Image (cartoon, rainbow, N blue to C red):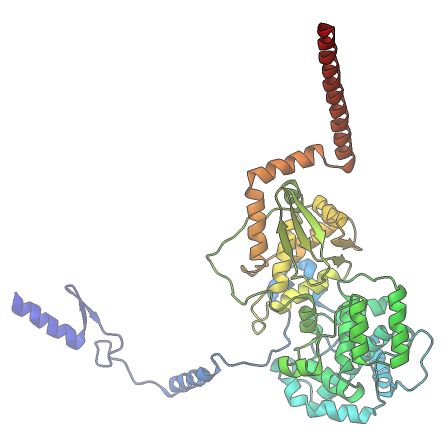
Length: 518
């Protein structure tokens, strides 16, 4: 028995491995019973190409401007939000028949951009914000052409292979000049120079922030370096984003008048703009020259818009975990019934959501947001950008949309947030706004770490029986200030009656004692 087992063990060592009394072949042994054949030449080439990819693991590649993912496009109501209505920027929609009208305007604005000079006399009402130099089209084209090898890397090779080096450079020049001159006219208030209908001007604002309508920021940077002084081109773009997106117009009061007086007096010094911007409650420019070098340029305008809307330090790149603390969603009306009041925040950043709890109530502070016809397209393209494989894994905008979707279940929730000046509705009925958030949030998965502290505090507030009882009492009997005043008045009347009874009791008592004494 021992001899047989030892022989069996010897056999397994030569031909395979032994587990108990069973024998298994060793897959990695060249002399095993599988008797592998020699590797063919085409197989060797495949293995060699696979080995060459070893260096790509963990390498930082340049982000590419990509198409909107299929999971967003396959929703029929989203298709219109992914495609430009008026102007094509870049190669994705270039040459479409319905967008050809704006190609003539591109040439016109490119000439205006080259000829623009701050020394020239400006029309009345146009602000002299930006110091510009007159530059020839020839100089601009040479600058753009020099960076074409780097710019072409931002697009998929299959998309741009039909364009020659010269054709692609011409497209980049016209599109870049068009964008910057459009920004300049909007920011300085020189709308007439655009020579467009007002609805086309509004549609261009929408089209410039589509994922498939992006231009590499490197092109804009080269053109801005030729035209603007003191890095003011980036400041101009920031002003445009601040005024055009998610921020309602504010009245031009006394302080705004002082601001324009200083602009006329000192020109466009960046320090004056920054100082007066703080007085007027505006945020500073997105990048100083040193910050631009330190942090690097954004990939395109859509990324710059995201950095304006979201604090990059507010979200961790944690990815999606199967385990974690998940809090149940509650609508705005449910939270109100739990004693949570909604307040508009001073900040416009969508990441600035805060929760403060008190003894018997709580406050949920949300940033103000404007809802209009461009809101869905803007949010969908920001979400689609976050879904691209080579973007930061924070899903900040996606998480904000999912958080708002949890608050908005029906028209009553929209009405509650609108009454608190959090939702500024220029879109339609409250029901239409609720459906808008439902459509945007379809198929979205948020960052599980986003707003986790706020969600935990909300859950704790809703789980407190004492706070729930007080909130129910308040909502049932003190829903309006008039009921509270009536309650105070009733308490006052009862107090007077009790005081009268006490006084009459004392009078009766002393009167009885006085009679006995006499």
